[in-house]
Amino acid sequence: MSEGSGCFSTGLPVFDELFGEFRPGRLHLLVGHTELNFHLLDRIGVLSAESGDNVYYVDGTHRINPFSMASILRARRIDPTPTLRRIKIARAFTAHQMDALVRGSAPEADPFPDLLLVSAMDHLLSDPEVDEEEGRGMLENCLRSVEEMARRGSCVVLAALGDGRGSDLLQRMVGNVWKWASLKRRGRGRIKIINQDGRWVDFRPLPPTQTSLDDFGG
Image (cartoon, rainbow, N blue to C red):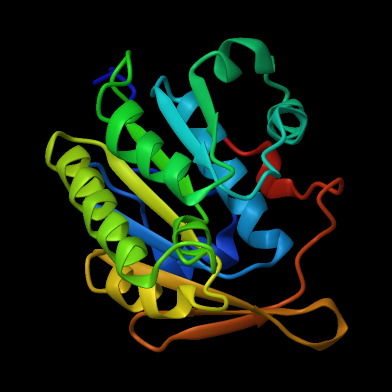
C-alpha cells in the first residue's frame, strides 16, 4: 500500500459529520441515485489519490468523468495531473462485465488499490436479462472478492442505486458493510442523508460547479 493510505473524509462537512471516516480494511456503502452520490464518489476518489493512494474505480453507471474530478482539484488550487494518474478506471456495461472486473481485475490490479470504488453493482447484477439465481450468485462472488480486498488493506466503497430488482441484492450488500448511508431526493433541490444508526440531515447541496470555503481547506 502507498505511504498516503489511511483514514480520510469527503471534505463535505454535512456528510462527514453524519457518516464519519472511510477506513482501510473496511467496506462502506452509499445508496441512492442523486447527483450528490456521484459527486461524493468523485471526491472520495480524488482526495484519496491526492494523499498518495492508488485508486481503482469500477464504474457501472457510465457517468464517471475525469474532468469533474479535475475540477475538484483545481478548486483546491492543486494540479490535477499527478493525482488523476493514480486513479485507474474500468467501466462495466453488463452484469458479466461487472462480475469479471470486480472478481478478476480488481484483486489483481497493479499497483494494488488502497481504495476500491465500485458503483451500481446491484443495478447491473439485477438486469432482467440475467437469471435471478445467476445474479445472486455473481453478487455473492463479488462480495467475497471485495471482502478479500478489504482484508488485504483496501478501503472499499460500494455505491448502490437501490432500484428495481436490485433492492433485493441491496439487502445482501448492507449485511456485509461496516457502515452505510442512504441519500434521497427531497423537494426544492434538497437531499436527505440517513445513516445506519437512523441519524439524518436534510440539506441543499451547492451546484457541482460552485465552490465553498471547505474546498480550499488543507
